[in-house]
Length: 351
Image 1 (cartoon, rainbow, N blue to C red):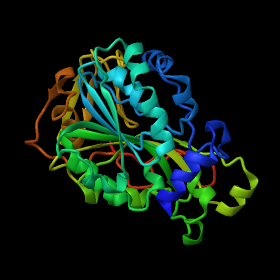
Image 2: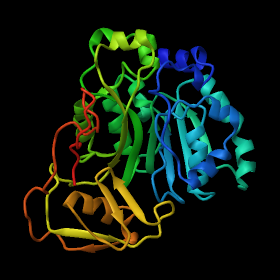
Image 3: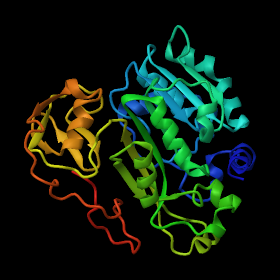
Image 4: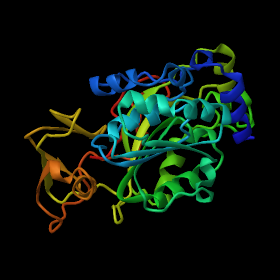
C-alpha cells in the first residue's frame, strides 16, 4: 500500500505543494544566503512540486558524492548539485514516475544555468526500501540525504541498513523527516491521506533511535526540530492527541562509537574556514562551536570531527587516555523541544 499510495498521492492527488492539508511536508527553515542563491537557480516547475520538511544541506560538501533518497521533482538534488560543484555528483532515487519526469525534463536546463560542462546530476527510478536492487556501489557515497520520504515507506529499517552500506567510512546520513511522540495506532497506518501527508508513517522517535543504532549508526544526532501544526480539523480529530515533529538528524558511519557520551577530558577549537559557518560551526543541536574558543566535547563528538571531512578545520585537545565517566548533562528522554502538553523544556540531547 505504501509505495502505491505515495505514487498516487504525489503523482496524481497533489498538483503542487499548496494542495497539502498539513504543514508536515513543508519547509519553514530559513536558508542562508548561499542556499537562497542556489534555490534561485532551480527551475520553477521543480520547486512547485517540492514536498520536503527541512533543509538537507550539510556543511562542507564541495566535491562530494551525494545520494538523495526520494528525490521527487529534484529540488534538493539540483540545490546540492551547486553546493558540491562541478566535480561533485548527486544521484537521486525516486519511485514516482510523474515526479521523475519533472526532474529529468530539466537536467539540461540546470546544467546550462549552473555553467557546467556536463551535468553532475542523474536520477534513478527505484524503491528506497530496495536500494540493494539498484546499481549502487557499497561504500561509494560521502553523504546520503533524504527529505520527508522515509516516513512514507513501510520497512524503514531496510533504508537505514542500506544507507549504512552505501556510505564511505566517515560519511553521514543527513536527513529530515516526521516523527511522533508515541507509536501511531495500527488502524491509522493505511489511511491514504494520513500517509500521503507524512503522518501515519511517522516513526515514534524511540523506535527510530533503535532502528538507526541497529543499522550501525551508533549515536544519532538531532540537528534541529519543530512541532507540526495540523490545520485540518478532520485530520486532527483522527490523530487524537498524537504530537508530530519535523526533525533533521545526522548519522555518521563511524565504527566504535560508544552507547553513551563518555567524558575523556577532550576539547576542540574551531579554526573557521567552512562556508556558511564562518563564525559558528553547528555539529548538532547541542554543539554550536564558536571560532577560536575551547569547546569541551565527549569522545563520540570528538570522533565525529576528527574522523570525518571536518578534521582539518579543528584543533584537538586531549586524547582517550583518561576516562571521567558519562559526560555531564547527557540524557535519554524525548529529544524535541516541545512536550506533548505544549510546554517548552530542555531537550535530552547528548553533549
